[in-house]
Amino acid sequence: MSHLVFSQVNYHQIIIPLDNLKGVPYQMEMGTYDLGGFEVDKNGCFYFLGGKQATLAVFKQNVSLFRKRYKEFDSGNLFIYSNKIYTIDILYNFSTKKFKNNLVELNIGDGTTNKIYDHIIASPFNTYKFVDDCLITEEASNVAPAYKSTFTQYSLLNHLKKQIENNYDLPAQFYPKNYADEGVNFLGTWNNYHIYQRFCN
Image (cartoon, rainbow, N blue to C red; front, side, top):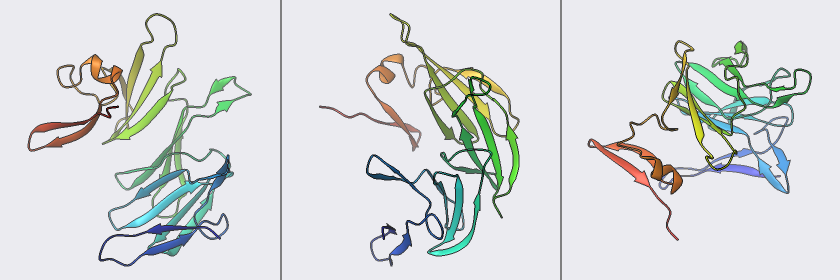
């Protein structure tokens, strides 16, 4: 049996088995384990959303608190905000011939579905991430010669959306276009400085 191990220097290890019935839910993708979404709350509880049928499994260290399966959406990234769990269901809906693009809100206490916000972004998007209190999506055009990306910010607080300049919602002077072209990542701020990451050959 495979296990997921959390370890830190001078602290004991936390070992949780990869198990779709009692442990961390997963799928096998091309010989590797796909664990789906993962989050940690302020109390140190671990949240996993994975499996062929989306399953939320919650642990305090290696003790299972609860688990819940869902039929109405698929596994995806997890994000905790304001004592709620969010995930996004982007798979293609063959009956409507559109991508779902549904935002799912779950109860953090028992995993019940609070609400599903249907089709929050009209166009299919290539990537997405949760930042602060927002979901940011990127829609990349493959029409030459532009190959331009469009970014949309969707608020988890008031469910309003707007177009933004980049996937970090930074002013152009802090994240010029060439940064994205060169693969520069914005990591955050420290002592009023903007910190970036760039991989060089």
